[in-house]
Image (cartoon, rainbow, N blue to C red; front, side, top):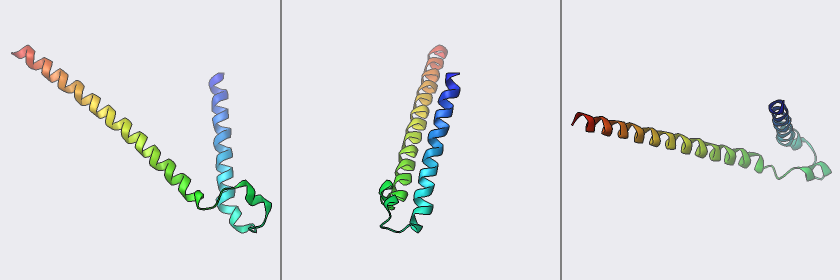
Length: 89
């Protein structure tokens, strides 16, 4: 039951972020600059910077994880080959 609640919370959070970003990028350019609604949103330049930063950080995390897995896998293969070489000798 707890996993369903956590999933619901994550879905609601993702939906809220998507709705906020959509309003910010697609609707706010058509609202006058002096309107008080602009106080709820950061400058529009961040509409591009934030996703780029998140994608770069995500790519770095995924790349680091994959490289660590590949290095560990290579070490295990080398250890097995070394152990097999000692058995033959």
